[in-house]
Image 1 (cartoon, rainbow, N blue to C red):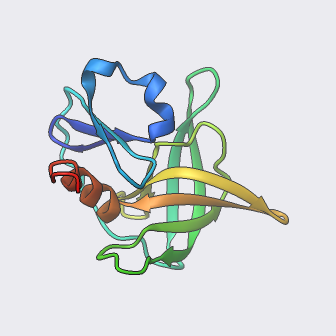
Image 2: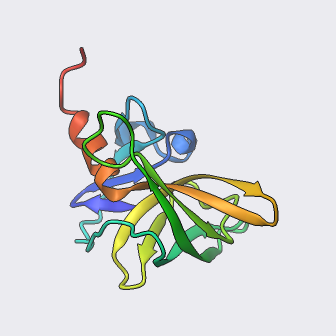
Length: 145
């Protein structure tokens, strides 16, 4: 997913899908991989809101576009974090959605999917809020301690 002119993001566990010469870096504590991309789309962004409808996009085994619909259940903060760590939505996403975008009902990018789990009869999908994604991209430029 392109998040800034010439910069895209996916999950670190998808690194085999990105040519090594395009990799910018990987987040230290999150499953995020940043890479150069020739596209320069300007994407409207927003924060996930509990109770709001969302759409996630993924890829099927044949490369076909898949769309999942859901509702944000929770936004999880972490101790000492300036931005939320992740959010959870109930929906019908699963394999092939990792690293894909999550949009709100206005079509704004609110996050990047990183995993899912089945809980009873419900599937919960986990995503990094776009503020977390952008914070991790900024952290790549900081010296490691």
